Length: 296
Image 1: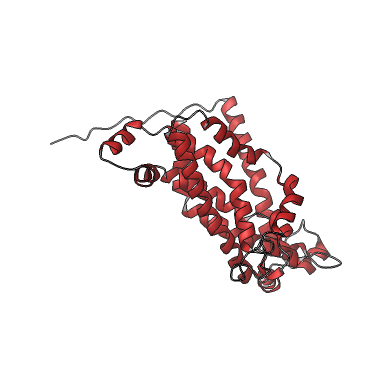
Image 2: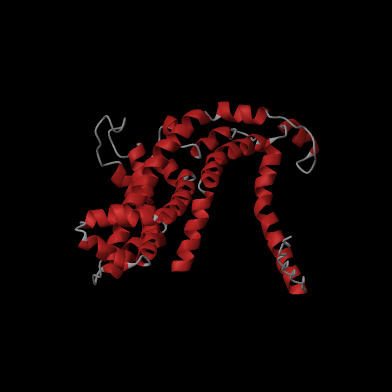
């Protein structure tokens, strides 16, 4: 008769005062980060009439009418598609171009590598507002074919917003991917060269599959940043039916007063796609950050 081997249970660490203070601090930070979101959800589920009579620091007046009204008033269905037209190509183009530049910086030992990396990274250090007037004038003078833009200009077109987002986001992606690719073993490329692989095959078939965690992490961040972009859409767009969903929140503001309950409902609707993308890529996002930290 065999006896089961009992593994000793690890002893719990004593809860020291310093550790208790750390847990309390982290809990307070978590509550501080979650409070605006929870408050927006709570406000969106209450009627304006009830909050006007009883104040926002009260409970009652529950309703889902704010979501229905916000969806119809702001025409979110159309503007969600506009955001998709801008976000999806911009993210794919940013990751593709940034990965190519990062591959050159990480794979080849040129004297200009640091200069090239600094050139791309410097775009993130320049305030976007400083380029407002030059870019506005440029966009109003660059022509496009009629099938690409109704205005036949880069201004007031999806292509303009795609190019602006790609230009400002490439620097960060190049910086992250180049550091990630430098940690890959050089023996992989030497073996690929022995097998007769070209530079393109080394990039596409050797490097890119190994960079999937980093690309997934960057894709999650880029979708969030480009989707939530508000500044350039209001500057480089004039047609209301082309505005992305974040800019369409202006349609919920009244001329003489603003229904904060309605705006909260619209904000919650706008935030749903980014939450869906994060939860779908959550494992890859955490894995990419972890591998990047351990290899850096």
